[in-house]
Length: 299
Ligand code: RIB
Image 1 (cartoon, rainbow, N blue to C red):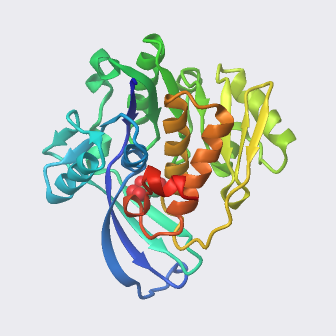
Image 2 (cartoon, protein in one colour):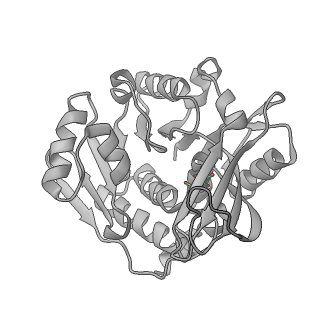
């Protein structure tokens, strides 16, 4: 089977639990501090590796301890990490995360080395033996655009998780085959808030005009919807006791991409993504919460 290529961010997550996120001017106490491997790109790659996919990650880390831990974790989780770039001039990316009593989070990302993955780093060799390339938006947008354009030219299917939400050029969006935003990102790209399937179809028209054929919108506890201009599919979220929603979206995307890469149907892919995310939110942290394929098979 060909590889999945994830091009994206690696962050060390500095995580504390709070009762509620502080208001402006307020000082509160956090309960403990944990250093947990994270970053949207690395979370997606590790989740795919744990599901048994053949996956390579490309990203950038600083020449520091955090970078070493993050790269080691990729390797331990069966992710090919040979082309991770070492940056002497910038620290490894960091995310400061507060998880509140409901399991919801607030995140501040400091890009560090992630900002040094540059368009000129992208070479055709990255796409050898690759069936699917997956990007997010925690590395420079110009690099994401270059990756997607190059993949498209080489006949590799492209997936974009437009997170965190940013303004994107039509040129970039025209290189995306499958877009996987959450509700907020969908609204920021299309101007349409998704409440009903008609909303999804209306927003779809705007992005389909740019060449995107398929879209999956993740809807949190409401599940996820898929549309390709003809077929509408949906999956309900599993009812679980969520302790931390960090990496819920990343794990969903990993389940979808792992399934599609081995030839599963889109409905099966949606169901897989939902199961992976359901387990992830019952555990604390990003990469620390991602399930193995055996655990997913058990629910
Ligand atoms: O999607 C969750 C991730 O967002 C965290 O792991 C954090 O690093 C930020 O990138």
